[in-house]
Image: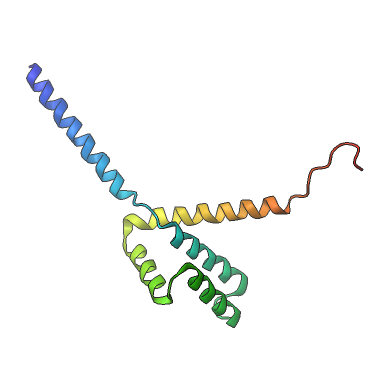
Length: 119
């Protein structure tokens, strides 16, 4: 009976190890430079629109500064869109980046705190 329990425990541990390895594959690392570039492009689109000449120039500057050609960027974006395991982590990373930028912007807008007696 003890050998059966030992075999079952060994099988259970093997299954847990396999599941853990599978979980790691489902949470691939996200290319932070691509996330930052994508986020900058989203912000530029909101600020300048999609089709204005200024928007096109801004997009070109963003891609050039990040080291992407338009074709390279679109290829990488398509790879992420086509990989169901990559899409959600990518979107979460973009949201985190946007939240960080919003928080930084809010901190810059706050007036300095006054001390008592400085009126």
